[in-house]
Image 1 (cartoon, rainbow, N blue to C red):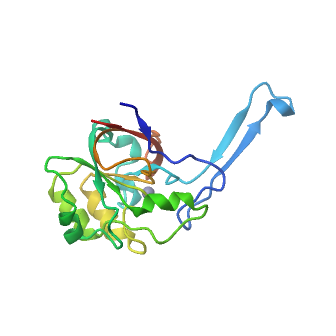
Image 2 (cartoon, protein in one colour):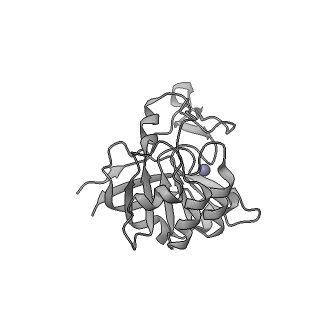
Amino acid sequence: MDWIDVSVPIREGMPTYPGDPPVHIALASSIADGANANVSRLEMSSHTGTHVDAPAHFIPAGPGVDALPLDALIGPAYVVDARSLRGPIDAAALHRLGIPDGETRLIFRTRNSDLWERSAFSADFIGLDGAAAATLVGRGVRLVGIDYLSIAPEGAPEPTHVELLAAGIVILEGLDLRSVPPGPYELVCLPLRVVGADGAPARAALRAR
Ligand SMILES: [Zn+2]
């Protein structure tokens, strides 16, 4: 089976979370201008496109993205079909989604994926509320992913992020799951090893198992 690249292409003008620095990519030296090589300067938020949140994102003095264990980021994952939901994924909705026991990397495929077809940031995304996050902590989940720029519902980022990050759960945001049917997969997700950072862009790929 082939790997499916579920990362969002990083480019100038791509949708970013409101208030975060926009993406700028430009040649710092260029062959066309007489340099012997092309070298680009990348300017972006640590939460650009497909990225991982580290505890330091919401927890003062929490571990940075470089301290996240690779074995949480690589391994069996389950893509949960949450496309029928119109509102936040709360504890009751989570229960109805019928997530198989024993899955420790959960990736929520929601209507959000379609928002990548828009050129600007969209506020009408859905996320997990704090109670749903607490339920996942209780299940022993190690990684939670979603297909837009926040794991939490619009306007209420704190309870969900704090619940998951305080428990050491890796948050994977900004996935593009448009071409991923729900079900069991292998996940490879490798965030950049930025020392002490609150998050970092990541390449992420899924392969059916
Ligand atoms: Zn983030």
